[in-house]
Image (tube, rainbow, N blue to C red; front, side, top):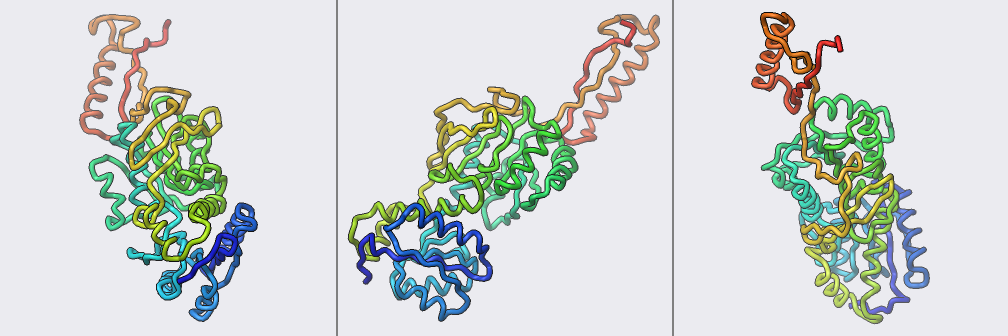
Length: 378
């Protein structure tokens, strides 16, 4: 059993060839800035099982940044033997060790937060854009089984022209004007800029940004959410780094002298299935400023400030389809009879054609809106 005091706390960031080195360095930099003098921090490259054994000999906490299922399994085995805490950035398998804890909320809780916003807005028809593909095993699709939604994949890209093309060819052409974006912040900002350029963020429309995209908020009237404690993240690296800072602060809130078993029990009692408790901050953009307007705790949404929607509207956007305005000189401005105004013969034909078009639903998610006008002589 390992017994240690805070000043002797030893943490080791383990990374591999699958890890983005810049991410590992950013996380180590944030930890050193926030916990100077409170822990001994090492950053170790892992290639073999021998590397792992050496790296974990004197570690109280291991930050698993290997992004490798096989290496993560070896780390779990060593934790069972040596009794150290594992802080994992991703879930590499459906099972976890009693020594393993995750720095992010579970997928179930993240979906629950999204569902609470969709339910609050009373959306039945919407588009989902994501940089991931989900299977039925993930449970994501099952949560929206009673909704009329379309799912589109858009990879994380730094190319604005690709975002413009995607919005124009896919989103705009779909006719659906309620949109959920689940990409990372960098590509989220590109997509929001494209929506604005295509005049798709106007009164009556709505945009929800997922938990990993909130730092890319742009424009006005967009709704987003993030894990509590990560509100200051302004990049992906910062987002992950602050999650580790939050985790370590939780550990250091424990008593000054403790053993590894007691720490494990403390974390088990203060997490949910070894994930952070389900607590999200609700964010709303107003005049290009991100405002903290409420929270979502265990799937229950609570507002402390009213939400603003595109076009500075306070009305909940729930007009999912697109109106196609057609102006018809139907005699409303210049009334006449069929016998004295031959134009009306064509008007009746036009109205009948539009009625047939709508009855046959020639274009899903588009709706004809007839605007009365005159023939132009006035």
